[in-house]
Structures are given as structure tokens and as C-alpha cells.
Length: 392
Image 1 (cartoon, rainbow, N blue to C red):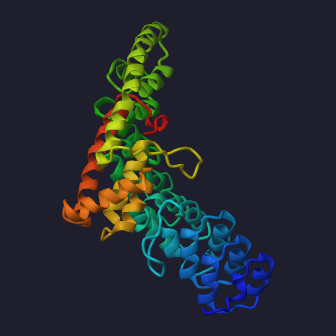
Image 2: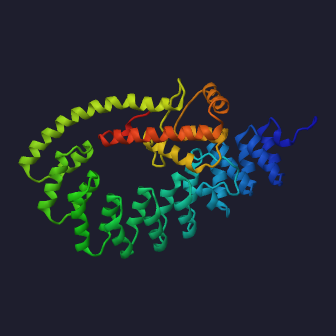
């Protein structure tokens, strides 16, 4: 660079910002937007940027919310918005951080109206964006595809609640493997006799207590509904499901008796909640670090993700991220909420190269650990414990 620095690098932020007004080259503007020490100078550069590759990088990397939001707003007006909102790396820098820009991508989805694009995001997009995209789907053919082909039950349920196709709803209500999905589809059936048959079958025969409860609430046969609710209260269902069933029991004699039983079991549930701290601590040490700790990520609604949510997102990322490298290792740790020291991370990366056969072997170990931890947390949830109340 020699003795002469560009005016935008001036230590006077006002002078530096004025210099940006004279710059039109996209590469130079991108450099200003990423390197200037002043947020107002970076913001001025972003406002002149049009290249989506640079804007995507800024949204992903910029620490100042004002600059990052401006880049996201600019990006929302570009054609590559679809790729960005889906979390795709097409036309964007590799190793995009799926957590740091999730809020901005959610906002970007709000600007998409093309049904093919929304369907593509739902079926193939970033794990955290699928629910946002399916909420905007209106095309019935695409809703049918989502309702029948998705693995994610929560996404399917949203699609089913918007579905009108009776043939598809009937097929799902009668044959789907997930009984909660069957109940949701039956609610949409115009053939109410068929719907009641589905509700009755699930209420009487399902091993899924949550689905039985949902089906019992839909029954027109009130005597049968009361028997199902009573059996749920008497079962080993999670405490929250038993308590919900208890609210709908109309027989006062039974209600008083079962209320006492539920109160007794609540004391036992508290003991399980106390035990969850040790279980989550054990899951946290599966990663091979002695001093690591984690913190809960925050969902788009402002509520913390549960530990199970974070680990499921981490597993999804491992399955979708392709070739594993150091940058993706850092992204993975952020997704599941790990806050390891630099020394810990350096040790693990060193072990990956010298001991366990490289980054792909590390990825497989991490995946195995995620599956084991997720299974542990699911068992804990089935015991009636709300994992969203606990952080590692």
C-alpha cells in the first residue's frame, strides 16, 4: 500500500464516510464494509453494495446489528434471496453460519411469494427455516408433497392444517405412521364419520399417549372419551399429558381420586427433574472436553431452545453440511451451544488429525455422540420433564 492509505481508512470517521461516497467499485466497497473500524463507514459501504456474494458474507460475519440488518435488507431485494433464505451456499461464501444469520433469513423468507421457492426451502432448505417457509405455502399440490414426504413432523403438521385435498387427508388419516399426524389430518376431513372412526381407533389403540389425548378430545362418543381420558390419567404417560387429561374428566368422584394420585406422582416427577442436571452434564461431556459448557440458543419467538432442540439441529447440520472442516466444526459447536475455550478446540482439532483419522472421522464421532445424547434427552422428556427449563 505504500505511504498513502485510501481515504476510507482515515482515522476520522466523518472523512472516511465521505470517501465512501466516491467509491463505486464493488470489490472496494466490500473491503470497506468488512474492514473499516467505524460502523457508520461500513454501513455507508453496504448501502452502495449490490453484489449478493458480498452482502451475504456481511450478513453472516458482521457483528454490528445495524450494518448486518442493512445488508439483509439489501439482500432481500436481490434475486439470490431465495438461495440465501434457504441457507444455500449457491452464490454465497462457503461455511455460512446457520445460527448467526437465522433471524435475518427468517425476515428474508417473509419477502418470498414464489410458491416453488418456498417449497424448495421447506423440502431442502436449512433445518431452522423450514417451518417459516411452510407457513407461507398456499399451493395445494406443494402442500400435499410436504405433508406426505417430509420427515419433520412439526413441518408436516403445519402443511396438513392448510391442506384441503380430501384424498390426501384421508390417506394420511388412515395410514400414516405418526398418530399425531393422523389426528391432525382427521380434523380436516369433510367425512365426519370417517374422522370419528380414525379418532376412535387412535384413542383406543395407540401407544402414543399424546395422540390418544388429542383423539379423545375429538370424540363425539363422550362416554368413550371419558374412559380414554381416565385410562391416560392412570397410565405411565408423562405428567403434563396426564394433567391435561385430568382437566377433561367430568366424573367428580373419579376426578378427586385421580387428582390425589397425580399430586403424589408430581413429587416423584420433581425427583426426576433434579436428576436431569446430571444427565445433561454427562451429555455435555460426550464431546471429549473436560471444561466445556453450553448455553441455550434462542428461537425466533424469543424463547430458548431446549437442549434436545439444539442437539437435533446439530445432528441435522452434520448430516447436511457436506465435507467437514475446521470452519464447520466451529459452526457445529455454536449450533449446539458449546462454549469451549480456544485451547479445548485446538486440542480436539489436533486429536482429529493425529489420533482419530481426520475431520471426517471426527464428524462421525460427533454424529454418534449427538444420536446418543438425543436418545437420552427423549427418554427424559418421556418421563414428563420439560427440557426447555434446563441448560447444560
